Amino acid sequence: MPNKNLLSPRRRRLRALASRRGMSLIEILVVLSIIALISGVIGIAVVGHLERARISTSRQSALTLRNAVNTFRLNHAADDCPTVDALVAAREIDKASKTLDAWDMPFVVKCDEQGDVSVVSGGPDKKIGTPDDIRAPEPPPSVAQR
Image 1: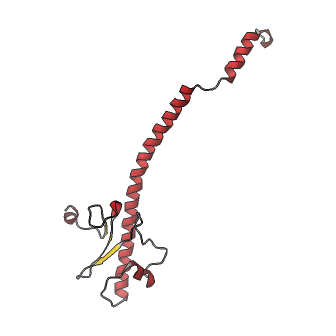
Image 2 (image 1 turned 180 degrees about the vertical axis):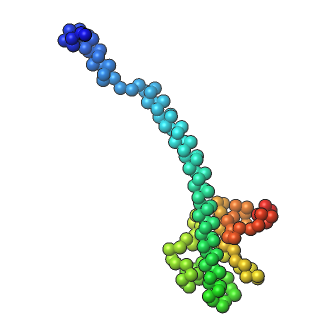
Image 3 (image 1 turned 120 degrees about the vertical axis):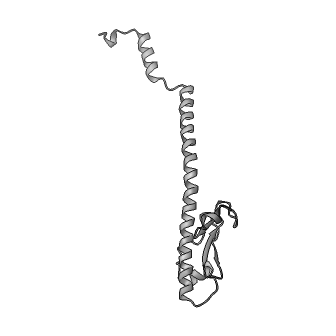
């Protein structure tokens, strides 16, 4: 085994240079490209889950509002359809309850002549009357396909 002191000065300098050498620009660019690729794949997957979560949250909030409307109509002899503000004023729902859908649009409460109540959100496009609307209760499949 050679003694370190016996190595030539040139070899010592080369070893010192090799130990101080960093990464090349190509190596850094390859690592950054891999990180960007992985981030893109994860981002695309998360966006899909986010939209499904918004739809699910809005559907659950609409069902809660529908139950509150039904309770309001049982407790009050009025035949009129209450608004969300009337539900809050009557304390059927508290002020902390979700009264807006996941896209920060107000729910629309509809009551028909038979006494059926539906709560509608415009959905992702924020427009009532389009196929992506969120309804509570959900319409039967034959109505939903039209």
